[in-house]
Image 1 (tube, rainbow, N blue to C red):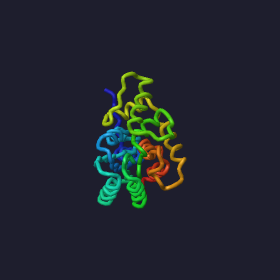
Image 2: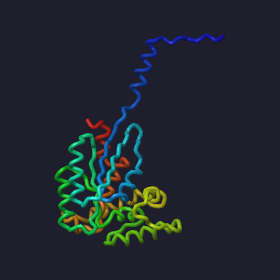
Image 3: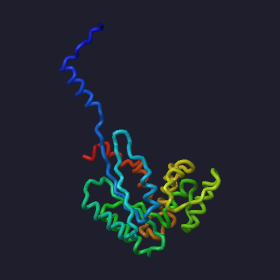
Image 4: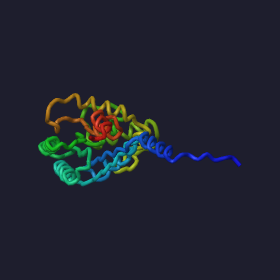
Length: 228
């Protein structure tokens, strides 16, 4: 019978300590995303990856069905009651809301350190930018048709459904997220004033997406420092 070599208990303890040191510390990043839309936006954001090595994203995405200003106020209220959130975002569209209300909501968010993934005129602009650069205004219905046309170039029979739970996956398969980020950033660079209601088309959704896919330099630096 082969002789089993007994390992000294002190050696086992040293090995355990060494292994513990090598294991990276798990870092949790808590996101709060308050959406104006009840299904379209939440269905999209809930599909994002939650784990990046030792970094875990906890994404609390809520749909309220409120107008622009109330979305911001709700985000402030929840954030103040729950200081665990590392990033707090609001998601809303211009649509038919009065210019004054839209501008005021964005400004109030800035004044209270709330991030805004706003779109003018509609969230669907972000989807379309996965396929083409667009710098002229369109209605929500026109966005839907344009998205259908782009996707049907690659697969026939696609019909856009506003509350679909599959749009994230569809865009990943047929669109180009990296190009969408570049297109959205290019649109944003066109404007240098605070009249957000007149900045059509424009969407800041790409800034939230960059954080969710770990391409935001500021957030990544905070993560690397362990939010200390």
